[in-house]
Length: 373
Image (cartoon, rainbow, N blue to C red; front, side, top):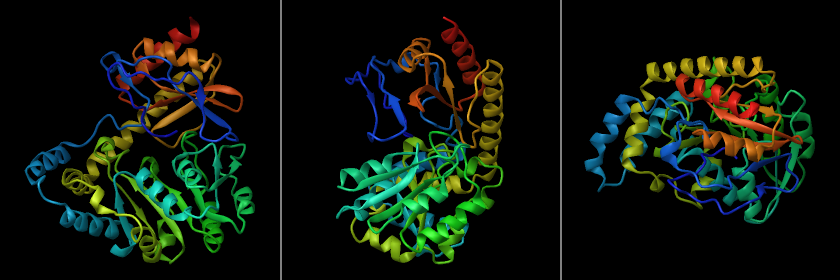
């Protein structure tokens, strides 16, 4: 549910149904029943991409590395792992790289659910790891979000049983954009990880005002069986370059790398870009500030129109709409605005990513036009 909409010029979507990844899920995504012409998209607000990146210095690093494309990037991978380990306060043996954090979620699921078992997570949430677990023969035990859209941690801890192979927490959560209290989540992770590995997906963590107070990565340093995922796809603006990492105990990392490859899936351009981006603190700060400004603007405008967005801590926001989701999505695309539409809690919802201010102004005007038609 959280990945970018795959849309190329005149791409045809064959499905005419609302699709869902699990029959018991509280959310279903509307799949376009129409052809999308990318050249007509004036505001691409459907994939939670950073519209400002990658930074100029990252672009320079990538361009300079193209001539090295005939070589494997093992040395660059080692450099990046060292930088990440220093940043996260763990040893290098605690870091595993991959082509985006989704790839690492799926690799973990492959290694954990070869012999069945179940995965416990919130519902709604980012479904990649649950989908792979089920494809491997595992079962999903969804626990509905609390009334404030935070994780129902008590419900999740109760759902763990002898067949549970993994607990998944997306914080901030996708597609709701909501957050779970850090202190409560830390206690949950300590308690749950004594029984089963806990995967905490922090793809949107850097959009928070004080991310260092919200991360669970320090639990890894304490030796807890907690796995924390980060990505360069969001605030770093490198979604198309595909690079991310997980932080876990050396034993947990080894349990994955003993079955699947790690850095062999990375190209030298992405590695060079990520190394450069790690140093771009000013650029990352600017991206965060612009994201916050745009999110505040859209929230204000949509609220003025009488809608009630879920408070977001990410690079997107979601809110219920009063018209059919399929009709709404088609109408928005007809006007050149790419968004995501869902059915959730028996209502249609719009999820809009934070593009540039100009794109979001166009989104608001188009939204007014479409919903009043």
